Every structure is written in C-alpha cells, then in structure tokens.
Length: 488
Image (tube, rainbow, N blue to C red; front, side, top):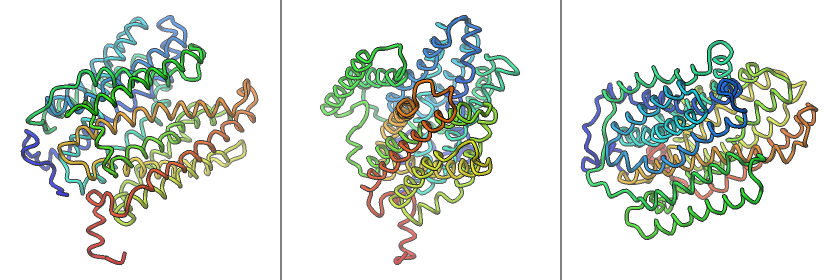
C-alpha cells in the first residue's frame, strides 16, 4: 500500500509546508486536550454550580449528560462534513463553536441555559476528534502515523487526570465560571493557527448526506448514551430503562438494515470486512470496557476507601501521565519489532494484570508502590491507545479514511460510556449498601471490581488474536525490518 499522504484526485488541498506539518500535531493535540479536559473538569464543580444556580446536585446530571448526548449525535456526520466542506473549515468551525459554547456556559444564569449551551459545546467537540485524526491521516504517510498518533493521544490520557484536580483548584480559589472561560484564549489561539496552517482536504465529489441514516443512527446512539448516563440511578425504573434500551437497539438495527441498501450510507459498515479495521475498532471497544472504569474507581478507592483528599488522590494518579509520555519514544520500535498482533495481545494482558494488581492497594500499601503502579499503567495504556488508533487506518483506502475516523470515534465515545457504566455496575454489585461508612468493606468491594474488570480486559485479547502476522505493516514498517532481517 502506498505511503503517500493522499492521492491528488481525492482532495483539494496543496501539500502543506514542513513548518505547517510540524505544527499540525500540536494543533490537533491542543484541541484534543481542550475537549478531553472539558469532560472531566466539570465533575468537581457540580456542587458549587448547583448552589449558584439554585438547583439540586441531581439536576446537574442534565448538564453532564447533554454534552455526551450531543457528542453521540454529531460525531457520525463529522466525516461527511469534512469531505463536503474541507478539514480546515470544519475543524476551525468546531473550535469556534466549542469556544463560543464555553463562553455562553460561563455566562449562564440558569440550569436551562447551561444545558442548552453544553449541547452547543458538544456540537463543536464532536467534530474535533474525528476531523483532527482525519487531517493527520491525510497529511502524513502511514509510516509516520505511529509517531504522530502517539503524540496526539497523550492529551486524552492527561486530561482526565488533571480535570478533577484543576476543577477543585478553580472552585476553591476562583469561581466556577472560570472553568468554562479557560477554553476561550486557547480556542481563539487555536482558531487563528488552524486557519493559517491546517490543510483543507475535501472530496471532489461528495455524495448527499444520508438523512434517514442520521436520524436512525443519531437517535439510537443518543438514546443509548442517555441510558448509560442514568444507569444505576433511581430516576428511572428498571422497566423504563429496559424499554429505552430496547428502543435504542431497535433504532440501531434499523440503521444497519437501512445502510445495507445504500451505496453511500452515513457510516460505511462494509469497512468491518477489513480485518485490521475490525480488530482495531472491536478490540478498542472491549478493551475500554475495563480501562474506562479506572478514572471512576481509583478516586473512589483513594478518597472513600483510603481517606485521601481529592488533591492527594489526583497526585497519586498523576504518574499515569508521566508514564504515557515516557513510552511514546519507543512505541514505533515496539510495533516494528513485534508487530501489531504481538503488541496488542501481550499489552492487553499486561493491562489486565495491572488492573488486578490495583486490587492489592490497601491501608498499608506504600505510596511508592502506588506511584510506580500508576506509572506503568499509564505507559502500557498509552501504548494500547496508540496501537489501536493507528491500526484503524492500516488497510483502509484513502477514500474511506473519513468514514473510518468517524466510526472509530463513535465507537470510542460509546466504549467510554460503557466503561463507566461497567465500573459502576461491578462496584454496585460488589460493594454492599452502606459500605461507604465502613472503609474496609468499601475497599474490598472496589478490589473485587478491579479484578472483574481486569479479567474482562484479558478476555478482550480474543479479538486481537484474529490478527495475522504482518497486519499493520504499512504503519509499523515491520515489513522493512523483515527484508533486512528475514530470520528476526
């Protein structure tokens, strides 16, 4: 497969200069960081915002859920938007809408306006990740994707760790509105740089938007996201949750039946016939079921179980970011040496084991051990994310990169929601009612939840076992190594 960035007849954009190519990963990384941070930093400020707006903390659930629902609805059309209007226009519009939404959220004087402007933020955030990835894939040859993706994936690992600490600091020393105003200077700077340096790839002949598919898939995904958001709460009965879940699944099945009849569906489900794409997307989904619950379980273990303060809990989690950054320099070499199949199978098992090791942390565990465990967990998680995110594009044609990016981003968003729901379910199952008042019972229940999620993560290696030796060579450059070392 050719390693050229993109065929000349597939896009309408000049080849970016070396300076622009060097700046592009930073632009995308900053946008990713801004979007990822926004999903976690708000959680800490919920009590302060609810008090300021004279609503109950439970009512703030709508503020959190509205953003997730907006992401779920608008991510599916991001690929079509980029093909139709160009990556620079859509990415710049995404940053502009997200920044405007942040400003309006900070100025909100009621819960209803805050929910509405969070939806606006979600519209911008939904375009950032898939269009950013698409721009990188179309700018850099596949042999450089590992290096580039390992760099831009770091914000997705750092932001969830910084979010709770930053949110608590802002609420304690400034004002909750500052949480939203932080995005404004970053967004404005990013907007200017994107217009100056981001290439504007666009398809010459864009098919019409699949409106019926958008309604079926968007409403199905939004409803499923809502069910996951309220899962485990008492605001809806079990019958209502089952009914909504059945309706969301019916809508998604309806989209699948609809998409089979179209030449240009909203999402090209035929991409799942590509082995590397199928293994990457499905493996990413099942792996994140275990990994996605860690940001929920660790603060619960450290604060409720072990009695650490929120700041101390954040500092104990911080080495994950250091580990994620430290391994990025060797990810490409690891993939070149062992191949995607070897790396993903062994790395998934290691992550599962590390999750189980988290279940050994107790009242007498040395702090150095907790920090070391967090470091290695961050490093191996970074390797996992980069490997899965780059394998998506290994054997996908240039024409299908936008659809591949959209599907991968949609599945990633859903897997994060499922991961938190799975963590909540396992914790509720293992932690008895009222255990929060008895620390050792809380710790024991969380330990069992970690073991269950670790076992689930290890089982997800079944998906990566479907890969064959040589899969992903166009990205890892392992083929080149074999030509020089046929016996290696």
